[in-house]
Image (cartoon, rainbow, N blue to C red):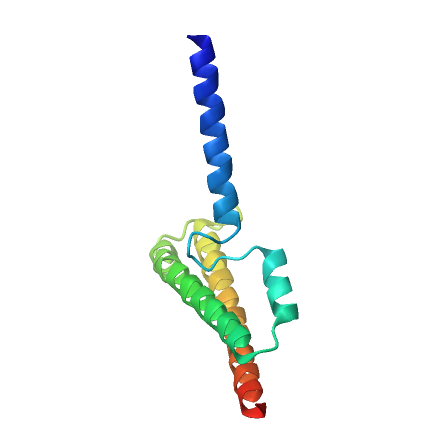
Length: 129
């Protein structure tokens, strides 16, 4: 019975590992890259199709950050209505919500700038051909 359990555990670990490799290699269909993969793609990009893929990736990132920022803004507004006494410890809940909102909007702006950059490179690359 313990041998069967051991085999089952090993098979489950192997399956989990295989799924992890598949997800890491991008075979699942979503366009999430690791930092190293993204840097490599940026280094190797020379065609309009590659620039378009980068622009699409950064546009999706921008949209994702803006979607994450929206509820944080609502939370910031909600928490700002309940300011406590002057003896409140830092960071106050309102400060945490504001900082998170500002982080997401800054990341969205960075992604938007990167998307614009690769759209310009795509246009320049396609006009040179």
